[in-house]
Figure 1 (tube, protein in one colour):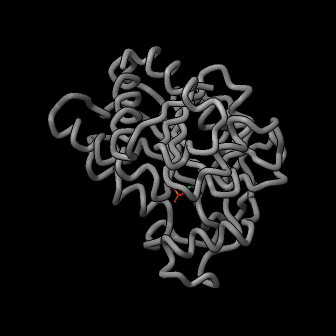
Figure 2 (cartoon, protein in one colour):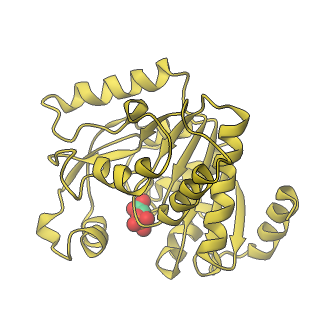
Length: 259
Ligand code: PGA
């Protein structure tokens, strides 16, 4: 796992956007795994700017998102489909038909999850997966206690995630946050050829510490990335604060990136 530590989230978002742009330039038909949440918003803005400046095109890219709330329609303003349309897809030249988000209203959610996995496989697998991290160390909606071999399925949110998400996206109303979601599994995520995870702010210090320097454990599902051969963590100094070897990681990744 490579840890890129930047002074600010703006700087980290630019570097992470560069990783995506490089991927799409090298393989215009890339399959991207995308994430929602407040963390990737700045990076998505950078992608929008790059498309506007004609530095990259997403015309042939296909995307699959990590998760969706169970019970929310794609048109609901808190759904992750809506988030993606508003924060990324309308700013880049991707064909909306090539963007995939799990259907939160699926009549048969188990079937929906199986079909989603099959579609990713048919597309050749995910080339680059974008991730955020929850304050409890989750990736996608894989909460503590989820098998590190889990596949796309219906999952249950912890009270801490419900609280985090209510604060950011549901006008603070916890009882409006769905308690279940459809989510790619940890095993599914780890099959991506390359992974970039973004983590910003003091609230992510313990999660980042657990992911990077804790043992591999289902108690912090992000720690599964320790077993991945090409996983990159882009964080700001605040999120990296508790890492014992932060100066070593920063030097090593800056050298590898030629910074
Ligand atoms: P955030 O969420 O980007 O809004 O902090 C991250 C996550 O829960 O994965």
